Image (cartoon, rainbow, N blue to C red; front, side, top):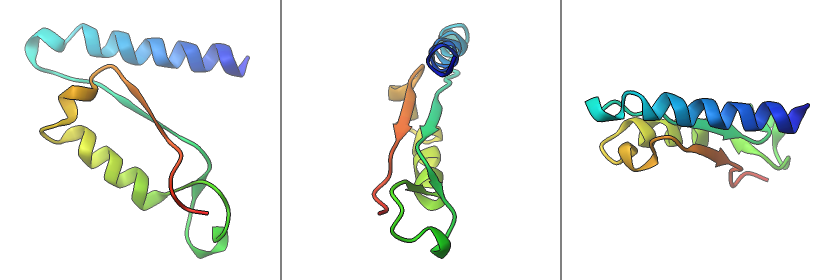
Length: 79
């Protein structure tokens, strides 16, 4: 069920990006691994909230159109 729902989500993002693309509207998604919330997660593999935020800022910025329709996987550098 997990694989099917993940595949469905990825296809949804692709479709959401394709329809408004001719009007210059883009869509992308972020698929993080384990999300780390501060010091209590120190040493745990995953992605920090700050790393996810930085990725989102990049996706909505001027270079974000290059990622239209993508589901960007965020595994992070923490841990």
